[in-house]
Length: 493
Image (cartoon, rainbow, N blue to C red; front, side, top):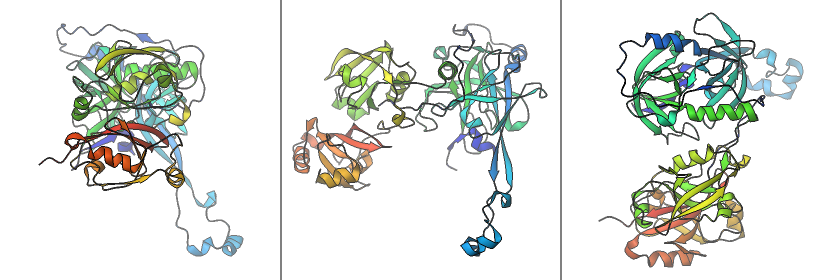
């Protein structure tokens, strides 16, 4: 059976991100207990975690969310006739379709004494009613949604008129592979359960579960119902919010993921103080650096984010960033890859000045930029050149080219300022097709030389040494237009 990445709720019943929905906001920042010191990795391993669990368990709650659903009844075709409706009424009337309640379960973590709770967005999404039950299994509260952020799968709940026991938050940036962790939640609705393991990997992403993925991977058993629960370190500090698993069977298989607490904390603080999640905006379209692109751009390795496109009239354009720049550091912190870069910018507040270390034409330089606020139209989009971009064919073989005219611009919604060769057809089995070239895109450069027509593109391709083509292509995916680089290798004999 094919391995699937499973969302825990489903099991139970450019840097681009969106703004979250919010019901209300408090102007005061939440009062969190934070311990930023790294864990003592030289300490002897405990023979029992019972004292730790007794201290932490009251901070982990069970969440029951309920939503109403209408049962769709069978309707005879005759009843769709207006004359029959006149005498017998509308068969779609709510009185003929009884509502039923769909209930799902999950977990949450108390982070403030006055009742703020962190959980997953998918645990409470669409809920009409939310109940929070404490670890004693008896004490129950009504909870309301303060705000949700689908882009990170984090939600903030609030329980009023309650004095709860908050957990202490750690600094998830200081975690290391091999650190001991415990997962606490409500799997399968059996009640609060604790499992034990280690951190298997850090900064996992690229699964398409959320727009911003920087997951902690653990082999501590996580099962349906653990969603929104706590992942704690050996000192009982919260390091992550359990989110999903990779499983063949739908149950724990040693590969679970959690949202790092630093990421969740940032969402919490912005929702509570601002009423929504605002994110930094640079205005570039980053893409991964493949081995071929690293060689083409004379880079020492594949670290960093290659800028495939710069949006006009954005902070990036104003700062002087260019297509082909490779960003390797943000404010002195190394950029691992393009997803890490997107995450770094998104977690930085608007109006923040950032120092970007850039490699341009093989030489390092520093460019300073002031981030803007992510526009609404870029919400939940990911036009960033995912995936490998190599193939097996020669030149532009497999691509049908045409010249840009008014009809083509109108058909593919191509702005007037875009110049190049219009792609009107692509063989999906060709090198170009495998590299990600798609119909309706525009080739604006071939081997870093601008082209203005189909003939210019073909000529540049014929003149390419060794048959290798570095294309810069404009495309509009998800309604957002921008450029990215694609490398097409010659056929390997």
